[in-house]
Every structure is written in structure tokens, then in C-alpha cells.
Length: 126
Image (cartoon, rainbow, N blue to C red; front, side, top):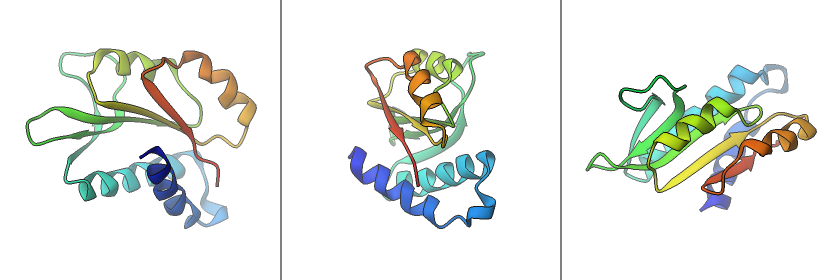
């Protein structure tokens, strides 16, 4: 599944003109593609999800099933952030993904320090 998702997102990112590849545009493009992918899986996409009664940073998008259970949780940033990791810790999801896209791979590698074993990290270079 990880390869399928990575390929799906890279395909969406490759359509961006090189002159428009700014951090916020890249992150929003990934979020839009994830929204579409979640809908194709017959799940309910919820962007900017913050767990109830939580002051933690919202996750970029989550996928709920019809019963209200979180199936997938996604964080999107140039590098792995501690704020998103804290939010991942307080939610229950079948799979948790962190997508990074910084062109500076050394920064991404250094930020992997924050990852926990239950979080799948995929770096999207395109």
C-alpha cells in the first residue's frame, strides 16, 4: 500500500510547474491528492484534523470509516516535526503516515529522530 500511495502522490506533484513548487503549494497539493485517494478508498477525508479536547497541532488530513474510526492519519511537512508526532501519539489509527518533501535530504534524515515505530515515513522527491 505504501508504494501505491507514494506513486499516487508523486504523480500529482509532478504536474506542478517548477516555478510554483513552493512549500505551501507542495503541501496543499499532497493534501488535495490524499483527499481524492481517501475518497477512492470509500473513506471519509477530514482535513486539518485536531483530536477532540486537544490543544495539539492538527494533522494535515485523516481518513475515517463509516463507524467514525480513524483508519489513516497523515502529517505533511518539509521535515518531520515534533508537533505532529505529539498529535500522532494521542490518536488511534490503523496506519499513521508522515510525508516529507524537503529537497534538503540531510535535514529530513536528521528529523527522523522524532519518528516512532508506528509511523510510516515516506519522503516525496520529484
